[in-house]
Length: 288
Length: 295
Image (cartoon, rainbow over all chains, first blue to last red; front, side):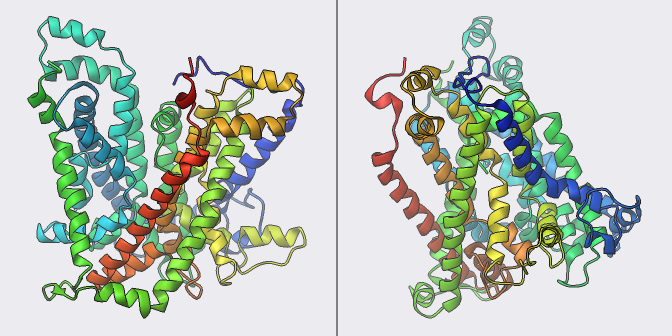
């Protein structure tokens, strides 16, 4: 759906548009204030955090960042960030390759069982993943993959993130086939066609796949929690959880500072690709 | 070339293997496991319906957890979907800066699943965290959000509701397809904005409301990070959702058979609720294409 043929109800004439603005700004403020306040709090002292409602800290103190970054383990957050990227980047690559291939097949080719497979794909999007966790764990245990990144990456190479296939199929269906037909007459084979015609056309959708997969993989907590045992392999999410550790006596200032740092990659990626991203989410409309 | 069935199948092969290996096989295996007793050390032992009998008749924690999960879904899903629809409706008028607001409301949806946000939540609902500081400033009694079993549920419900952005963008797209002429006609007949919302907007987007309800329900029943990180299931198991119980039984106590049985109960619950929704949708979901074509 393109933004150009939007049809709006004739609002704004009779009523006061500023009422809506005030309402929207208020809601946005309430929603985003916790995040904004978090940034301010990361510069505050431990006592100021629990007494000050305001955003602005009394003085800018970066020591919480330094302490939080060092952690109480023998590794710094540099290690944990590196680990997160070691999981995320290969996973994005295999996701894009497998999902583009499969989406291409679903959107263009005719083959036996296509309809059935497509409904299976849509069906698995509604399957609670938690049912699969335990047996998947046992399978990876048999394979000797526990405490490695393989269980977090390899399934994506088999197009298991069906949400993306669905998104790409929807996108491809909206693209006319003229160029592909012309290329076929010129003697392109299927792979050449895919690489030279389909992939360039799919670029906006591929960007949203990359962004979604980046943020979800960075956020993923249960996967690493189940599969990883040694601290040196922890991604950021697990390391953050570890820094809270015992219920009481949390060094909040340090934890807060590191939480801010942990959110930075996702926020940057989100704002860089915001437009594509939201439209991708809209057209396929799944996942919360 | 596109008629080449073998080529098409070759391209779709990764998906077929993926479904078989990582979805279908584990799915069947977890069903089989649910009839066994298995602790990872000794081989699984067939016990028939013992696990199901135990959770049905002699496991008060399961009953508690089931109740908590249902309560969570009943509170959180309508709140999230309702908020999403309301904000989308307000955003759908000719407004400047719609892109800014859309991004601002969407941001929590993408960050909300992260551990960093769970940390933030735990921290703003702490005894003298931000929420209580604000409440005392306006003269309210502070609440022990995380320590009082009557309020703990609300912290995770609020976290879930806060992430209404993804449902909102779907509503927004649907609202933009409602023909403006309908509103103009209603305006001529003197219908108020509220009447227009209930009598034009809502009936026309029931398929999307339905879709969002189902998807959000599936998410709500699997909510894990919030209860795990913020309340740790407590106090007094008041936020001990099934996902947490399944995790504990499977990966902490290594009662794998029992964990599998629990997860199948969760699956049956989600599947039957979806089935009921699909059945009921005949009576309240209106598809424009059914009675007369749109164009």
